[in-house]
View 1 (spheres, one colour):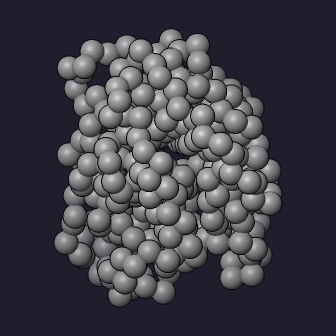
View 2 (cartoon, rainbow, N blue to C red; view 1 turned 90 degrees about the vertical axis):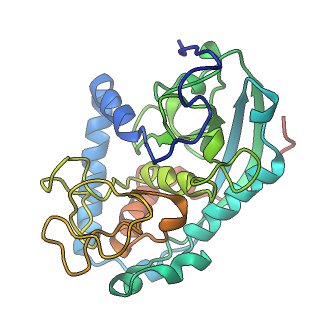
Length: 311
């Protein structure tokens, strides 16, 4: 069941002062509960390695349009966000995943040649609106079921499902990696960090929380490998190894793990910096995402569906 919280619960529906992502906590829980999930991930990593060894030409990959459904789950009127706010988030995703975001020009010189178009676009086909008595959700997937105060997904084989709801515990969002159970597949974003208007609150009001979480959805890890030292890795050769997450708006270069002179790639969408400080995916990150699209998530690569009437 969803954990009900009072209106005074810490961080309820509010953007924290620094980024916090629940993807890895949800990921570890699913690994324990669903043995098939681990096997699916291993297969995907194998396919990614083969494509990397074959030097897959990303520039020749077809542009994929992902049909997307947004589920707005709200207990207060302000949380029932507007169509304009939803559209602003879809616009950010379309810019960021096509490397068409104007702020990409802020990428430090050593990495400008790595900024890569993922050739992925997002087509909003439906918006659902669910009133709930649950005043705050966490990363336990309760928002994805009507039985626990949320709403179930539209066909997760063929659609990206985005849930927008108030999150507790300082969470901005979380996502399910490819190959997990269909009933919970998708991305959850805090109402205070979705899109660029309305309830979106600085420093997370540029739509980059969804960019970060959809990156996880397409099999990207955090650039520091989720370890508190230099021993981790994100499975991507062109993101420098770094000691841990970066927060706020760091001054370049930020050196750790002997990765000078360029230092940590904190401008990457898969770090923890503020929205205004992240600008790019690398070529090898795009290769991981495109491999997921061509294998585990191949059902998403369909013709765009017509947009339905909002519910």
